[in-house]
Image: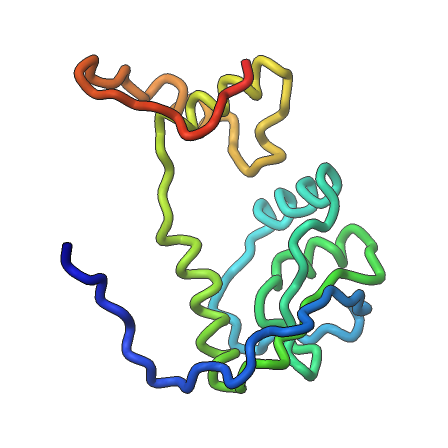
Length: 170
């Protein structure tokens, strides 16, 4: 089996790992947006984030550098401000160099975008949650998107064995 190609390291690996990583609560007024943040957040997505925070709580801490500048979580901070939150949970990335922080800002967003969906498992999960009267818009799915997903997935070829890795509760 061929080895996977690893990225060249142009940035020195962190000298010390994120030992002692802890969540601290920081005032939203003290958080500084990264001036050249390439990631955008429209009002629809901010509304989705707000709804997620209201439904599930603030479950994904914001990442900040030593100076309270945002590394990841600009949309979450925007949503928190609109919700009137004074404090947000943060993880301070003090173990990263300034260069690593800049690269990580891109990596945090882009690597997440590189994933996909197992359409059959996604459809099964959505159908199960619908039967339990869960509003899937809190998960970021629009009504049109859900309808297309439910209607658009064809039954798998009967010769293909699809075995879910988890139990779907219906």
